[in-house]
Length: 259
Image 1 (tube, rainbow, N blue to C red):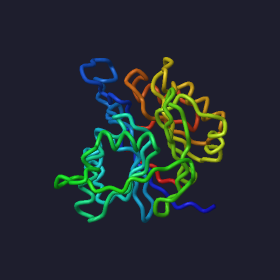
Image 2: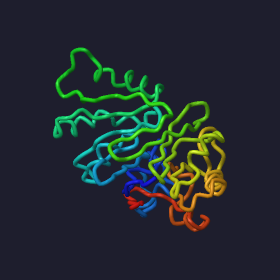
Image 3: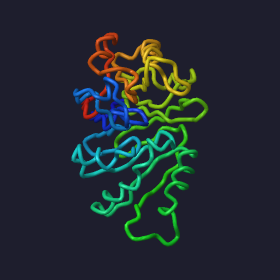
Image 4: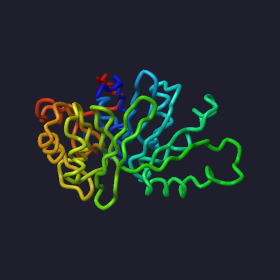
């Protein structure tokens, strides 16, 4: 199948606290390297005609301003944790200028959370300036957003179902510590995989760096970038030196042109 060329922008690559973490004075949080400054994890995926974002983090407004995003067609959500949905209200700016409701895509659990956390969006009598949205509940059936093919991939964040997404030959997975064998089959054949790698020490609901590396090797993905990292993983420059060939640390603002 012929896939459209895609541009991938890493809007944020940090864990829920971001890096630097408030009140922390460790060597990572006090680093002067810009690649050690990590907003909450999100990416922007663009084709020639379509722009979508995966998750609206608490940093969403700044991420859109920093990348000078003028048009946004849709938002895909991975799961309902606050570091992935908290910035939703700011999609209203795009609707204000475009005159169109924002298209949102989420699984049932995330849909329920959005309706609860942003109840005023769904009120019968809306306050002026409330975001205009079309909320689509999705399952695991592939679909298109504009000309971008989207294949949801079910992964596990301890016991919470989280959706990763495959866009053509590019796969993005965050907030996971387990992937069932049948869902791994959806990833095989990807040319590029982005995967969460929180830290070196085991964590109850996130892959460690070594676990993430093992998955890339198991699935024989030629190129991989690691995201959703904490200050506990170490400085960008040091971690990068440890990685096998074809594997990289993602960082905020990184842009990949992918065919």
